[in-house]
Amino acid sequence: MSHRSGRHFLQIPGPSPVPDRVLRAISAQTIDHRGPDFAEVGKKALQGMKSIFKTSQNVVIYPASGTGAWEAALVNVLSEGDHVLMYETGHFATLWKKMAAKLGLKAEFIEGDWRGGADPDAIETRLRADKAHEIKAVCVVHNETSTGSVSPIAEMRRALDAAGHPALLMVDSISGLGSIDFRFDEWGVDVCVSGSQKGLMLPPGLSFNAVSERAYDYSKTAGSRRSYWDWQEMVEINRGGYFPYTPATNLLFGLNEAIGLLHAEGLDNVFARHQRHAAATRAAVQQWGLENLCTRQGQESGVLTAVLMPEGHSADAFRAVALQHYDISLGSGLSKVADKVFRIGHLGDFNDLALAATLSGVELALRKAKVPHQPGGVEAALAMLENTQFGQTAAA
Ligand SMILES: *Cc1c(COP(=O)(O)O)cnc(C)c1O
Image (cartoon, rainbow, N blue to C red; front, side, top):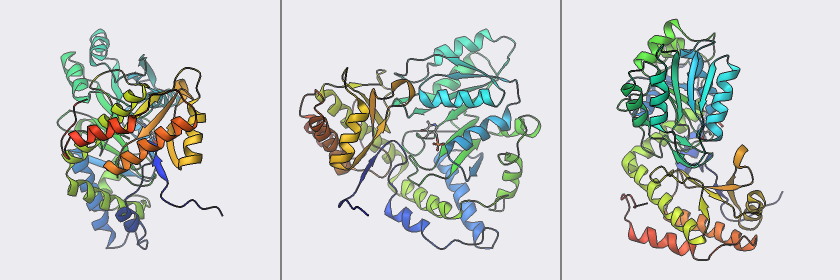
């Protein structure tokens, strides 16, 4: 067995490091998921997730990765042959579209350049042209983890309403929830998909659907054949705090602890912290003379920053140097941007010194790997941190 002293820096945009208190909660002895003690655990988790989604409507919890909850969202309300409109924000939007096609849906893409969020005007224009209302759902990724861009979800609702279109609004906030502002009820979202291992600071293994009354009503009569993912039976049994099949008991212990931590810090403070660390990271990237993949001002992610490598330099070779010499894991470029970008995760259980260490690791690795750059990125980030207070959003 080999051992490296000190903490490994897991700075990929999910899974994110798990706080010690959450790890301890998970390590409790497993209990009977049909016994009397479990109901409180289940009820607390379901109620707690409503407070995170900011909804008074139903939340469903699956023992599955985010991909499972993606499938659940589609099969509960959409039937084979249904037309869905999706927006190409990046790799994850592309995977969700591929899944929709595999499930027999007619998935249409509005093409994007992977350098910003979804464009509400393009969605509105497309919906206006759909006079027969054949499009049953609009699917948008909130925080596109492959590019570090955020789609304005409230604007998506406005686009649907402006077009007078009845399609459901379905959102993937797998990596946004718990890190950047999200308001299920206020923004008129019909289904939101999320997962445990990003902003919620848990290990992988839980995923979620928040479900509007309207989407839930649809699911009573519509949707594809389904069993494991079916909302109806789940919601019925959840009323008592129980689940139709064995839930991930220990992850629910951890979830309740993590929700407690988010509220103890205050969700608005959590969101401001992410914006501030993202702004400091961008200051470092700019000083290095490197390019942020996201070019749309105001749409840069608080969760991660994707950095373009200079022409002729391999992002994966650079990441390997960072891991070997400084014990830091950085996110890889996915599909279209494979080997062209590396991603710095600044989400979850994170603070100023963790950011300083992360950016120092990146800068040291840039030197070690002989990637052309200007020095002083860490100093630029520290100056940004010094000039902005806790709980205060830094100017971009
Ligand atoms: C991580 C992620 C997924 C996939 O979730 P898994 O838990 O890996 O199945 C989907 N969409 C987005 C935006 C993600 O960040």
